[in-house]
Image (cartoon, rainbow, N blue to C red):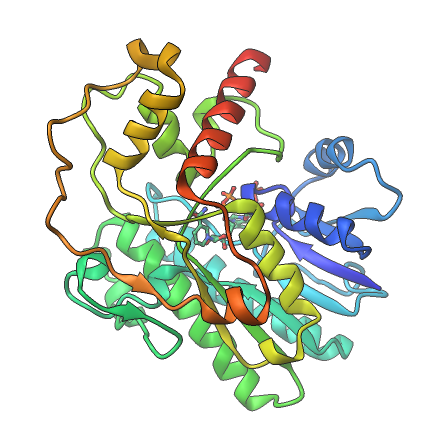
Length: 331
Ligand code: NDP
């Protein structure tokens, strides 16, 4: 059957397209322009890959894009922190963008929706990911729309709020439309190889940009903001497996493979890629966050029910670094 994947040209979106094609789906990916559609078709030359142009997550009409579609993975959402307008550039596309996809699905009679949320949607402790807790499907970040839209908060917090508010809006919508079968996937920070089209490493996706900064001139270790990770292929696979899992209907599916501090990441690169030593910042004597507890994430549904184990940190980091070095040569 045919599924729609929004944000198909993004870091995660492209991996979702690949996993879905590999699982036998016909995949229609949305992008914002015909140029982006052409670039993406070069990456997925398969006859089972189609594109649809959805220039605006809020205003666009999905009628054409949804023809013949039986399920939707909605992954498009702004993942940037520096924007001009928190409401227009972060909150509205995330929240209203999600609702407009859901309304279009409802109108078209499409019942199965998988939505990409974020660990940000869970963080309800003042110490965020340094609280001695296990975050799980019952946790909700407390930020309200009014607080997030106040213009007073840093972009990163508004981004996390945009994800929480979009996910909450989707669950509210599903409550009003009980025939809708919704699953939300809740990734921690995602690292991994880049398969989506990018024109320069300056425009590398936000989560991989932290690893790129390590091998591209960081003088000191970047701060640890999201010290818990997953790899992009596994999280893409979780999205696709959720699509055909009855057990995932109506569920929030958080996923972390475990802790990932900047210190650990730097040490992994130092050890396994010694030729990069002169590009890396010095390894501090101790992990700057040693002694702090890193929160756990209940990943049982993904691991046990959907059967996705996730890659270890070392493999994930090395795949990411190798992919970034490969891109450096090409671009
Ligand atoms: P990318 O920036 O690589 O991809 C984002 C995708 O969303 C792109 O296809 C982008 O299109 C599209 N998009 C962004 N803003 C808009 C908009 N206003 N209108 C239409 N399309 C838009 O980021 P990721 O792949 O990392 O993120 C994918 C999803 O995963 C997002 O929902 C993100 O919140 C979520 N996520 C990511 C994590 C991570 O660590 N990477 C962790 C947790 C959740 P275009 O290329 O045209 O800008």
